[in-house]
Image 1 (cartoon, rainbow, N blue to C red):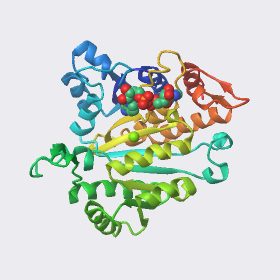
Image 2: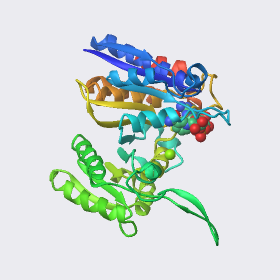
Image 3: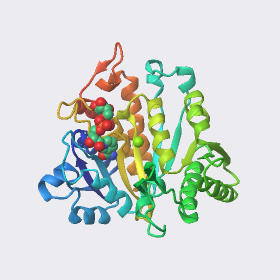
Length: 365
Ligand code: NAI
Ligand code: MG
């Protein structure tokens, strides 16, 4: 088929790794007879310098019209700018209502022995965290329905005090849970809902809704887990999880923890989805979980695998091209099995490749 993909490489290593992802997508297009129209746009520091904004209205409009958005990373070592490069991500996520952030974690067999976590514990780990991305503590300050100032630092007679608001509506909780259950149906049919229902009202409501939604999915095994216990189980028995669903802050913390199961930030892709459909799947924003890595930018050192696996997620979720997505994932696995590594995965006896060379090997396969 014919598809339109907005490409926003951004800053630092963003353009380097996205170039390799696009290279792999071009190989897929040729092999399977598809046409991908790539619409390039500026985001982050690059956009601030050229257009005065972290993302222009024109670029946002291009994104709106596309089937999916492929995003690199934003941010730089420079500080003190009046416009923050990260504003681009905020506008894309909140503005386009990408409320469901999917982060799969699957340590590759060929890398298990080099991991800092025991191979026996890691083996068989294949989980996905479904993180709520547009609500909770991160957005309390924007909530118009909360009286007073819901998030602030204020001065009192006893010194400063601070307040944050953790607000979730029934609708927000239910829609992210449904994404988790639908995701589980395509996988090993297990959902772990993570909360802090022994302490937080928002978690009590979350758990109540989770139990109600679970009834609509009798074919999916369902469990509740407190977030502190989840943090422990992720390290003790990561292979026991299939789909983990949780609110914004818990998801932020647990996914950083879970990224270490896969060995490097340079290995993990992500997808952010909403409810808007394209002709072929869900409209989505796709980005590696890592940042712009100014310390290695411009040196052909960055690991392009996270960006390439991100492209595979784009094919699967937004374009409905499952076989093509699996082909990319298989090619990555073959390269790791063949002993190719980038510097972040440095391992004795393995061949170290640059960003372009790793991208090329994956494209060849
Ligand atoms: P970072 O993810 O950019 O880098 C952390 C460490 O991991 C660095 O040592 C870096 O060299 C390494 N690393 C990251 N990706 C790698 C890859 N693909 N291959 C090999 N090594 C890799 O996080 P950091 O340093 O905290 O932030 C740098 C900038 O990126 C900041 O401006 C930050 O705000 C921004 N950032 C942007 C994100 C985004 O665009 N979604 C996410 C996280 C940070
Ligand atoms: Mg984080």
